[in-house]
Amino acid sequence: MDRGHFFALLGFLAVALMLYLVYAIVAPFLAPLGWAAVIGVLTFPLYRKLRAGVGGRELLAAGIMTPAVVITLVVPVVGLTFFIIQEATLAYQFLERVAADGGEAVLAKIRAHHLIHPWITRIEAYTGPLSLEIDTTFLPEVKEVAAKILGYSKEAVKNAFLFILKIILMVIALFFIYLDGERVQRRVLAIIPLTEQHKIELSDTVRRVLTAVMFGVFLTCLVQGALGGIGLLVAGIPSPVLFGAIMAVCALIPVVGTALIWLPAAIYLLLNGQIVQGVGLMIWGFAVVSSIDNVIRPFFISGKAKLPVLVIAIGGLGGLASFGLLGAVIGPLVLALFLALFDMYQEEMAGRDDDAGPRPGEG
Image (spheres, one colour):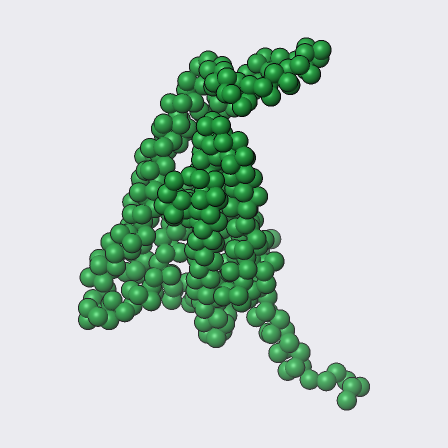
């Protein structure tokens, strides 16, 4: 190996090491930085208009735009989060009691219910010859589940400070995206080995897909909230419109989502002896409200993003599984950029074939 190759390899390793160290430092804050980038890209046209309205003063425009976006978007989400934390605190106290006695008090209350007790008596009549006791069979499982949920609740309380820190970091990053975003974009595009037309197409793809994803998420949340409100109305839960609206916001939360509202409502109905309404609401929640987003969201996004439904579905679900809530936005964007680069490469190769002309012996 000559000196030139050795130093080139050494430089490559140094760059790779620096990139890894940068990633290791930034990794804990990728989610808030990613959300700041998403919000910044979506609202940047409004920032441009505001900047023009204040005579091109970038610092003033960024100083006005950032708190406006925080008040409009971030404050409602933070308020909902603290509402959920407040409710989770009550659930935490309940789970502590359940974990303390292994769930005996809860099971005893359920067993004593005038509609459930006859069925338990019948079941014990059949399971008696098999020496199966409902208490001894289910109590250890209830205690184990309660202990696990209690552990998750403790972790959530511990991470509350980190959540506030990430929100502050996101707001600061959003301010600098407004202030320096265009300059950073020009510097990044300058090092990409593509034509100016292809760079413009990539920028348009990012804006189009991000807008389509957020549009699809918003519509999907509205549909889930409406369906959840209908289920609550039919089940006889008071204020179904209010709870439906809260359900629409909760639909943004990964995994649990709308179940934060309809599941406690169904349990409430069951404990009050409204078995048909409770079971019906539970089936409606699982089968329709919590599941329909995986079906309708790709269709909402696909048309506006001008991408196949399958690409949107795989990108959204794969991104959600890999990176959480932010991945549901980034996943379709990554696949869209990949397809755009693939099309550019295909066009480039087709152009080279045309420039090469006919081969000897052809034509």
